[in-house]
Image 1: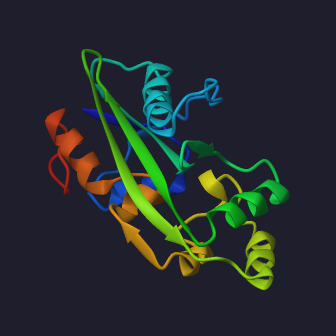
Image 2: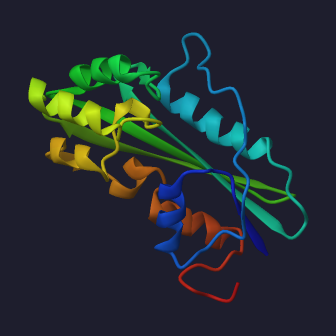
Length: 192
């Protein structure tokens, strides 16, 4: 069985490697990621993973893995910032508060789709102007939901999490392993 990673994220590729899994091919889907008016973060995230999987054709000998990570402040979805100004807004809003990071997974074969979502609670400290400006200048916020990546310099701003660290990075490793095994795909270096 061939594994297709439906994501161009280098982090998801690295996290799969923790399971001894290397995707045979990467096919990043191009879908509209605009939330529907009034859509809540968790259903939005699940819908994005499902739509990404639906956008990728799967052959009889293939399994497609797609995921979406969403940062939520209450009922508000904080997507990927369009510019440094929006990244600064997000980081200021998150500062000193707890927020949710939701990662949804969709695993698809020609006959079935498996889905799972994982919610992690994250606390970000309130950033000084110096910390905020240095982080924005690093450009680490580019392309990251909520304007930060926990695995980079912004990890220094996160004193506490409850849940899955790997899910905050973009792919919950334990849940992904369970879904792959349920679909009959070997993990941890099994015969591929």
